Length: 206
Length: 206
Image (cartoon, rainbow over all chains, first blue to last red):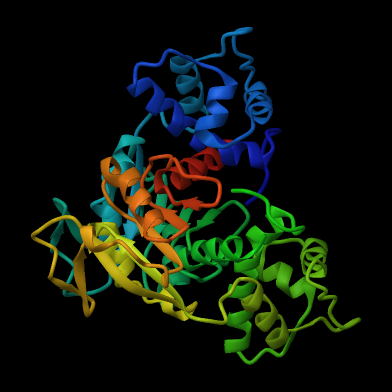
């Protein structure tokens, strides 16, 4: 992941968790939150939280804390969650199907617009009210923001290439393939065995 | 995540990706790899890779690089991937079902041993050759290493409590609930809208 702008990457990486926490506070009608409370809720030290917020000119109210609603608005704007973002999913296998039915995306303004597969037995069928399209029809998706790759690993690179050619430059890759992309393309990888391996490490160490 | 031992957390966080990369090299019959090649394959700077390896007493061979097989063995030992680790999944919804059918876990020596649900329509049915057990039977799972929580958010905390009571202290949480656990329990969270939000940030910034 390239660094862009002047906000440190670790700070950026924490923003979605802050956002998630603040939305939960708002749902519970909390209007103001202290950095100490945020620390308890997110596990990030309160001094770190205050520093992270200061990058966005948010310093809170002396002795009181931060306006929940205001901070949500700010973070939503930074993370571009204040508008609907279209998502394309390629690969309607087990993981793809689970993601298509996953209700959490729309809550964050991510809208799954099209789903594609290369299997003739799947193409044309419906899933969650959406028709599965032929991967060969994925030629122009400039309106879409993000492409999710849930194909078998042998199709991962060609799927990435196709998404990029269609105009999608932000990819979430669920395969274990390291995608070969140009520097203007952003890739994030979700590889679940790695998560388990880290749990394993911390379980046995210390 | 608590820091344990003397290896920095960012180093630990990179180990699974190194492991994944090395296994792929071995599959392609590569015997020795330079830090520069590892850098190209993982996106981690070669100086950083060398530093990370030095924490484990791995310094490579001057002008040549690192023995792939030896490094795999070392990392597998550190991440406890050199033995079978039992995994329990609670919540056989869309995500749970996808994980149960996911072939990548066993490749890393994670073996899904039991799956649980609280839905009478699911309990007793088979998925991927495993019988779905009644969550109330989850009372003693000391042989299991890791619990994966894929229940609806309102059941997340009680599921965590139950897993911990049963002796499982390493949890992978797919809900957006911040689990309240004691300090000897390790939790990692996979919340996919956060991944998309980060893609969004990097797409628009810079």
